[in-house]
Length: 81
Image (tube, rainbow, N blue to C red; front, side, top):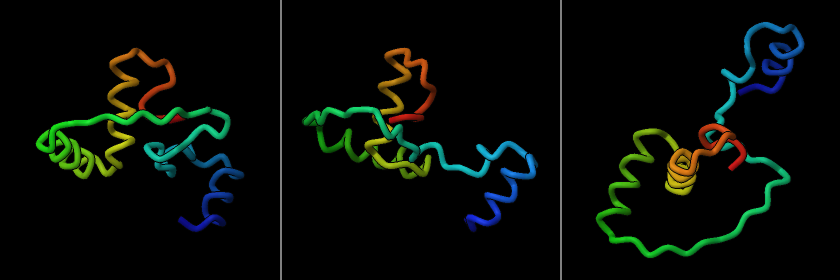
């Protein structure tokens, strides 16, 4: 997206600028992460990849989103992850 277009839309208070953002890839700049290594059956990874591709997100973001939903995260889908 052209940044001039985004800036103009934001400054003119046109529509909700969140409609113009891909929140599935958004990250919170001050959120500390811990790496976790997880061994999964190959068939499960394949199914994860199919679902991630269908939704247009990475496997990692899909897993984070599903974990957040399961754990009752109040931050919403994958926002901040």
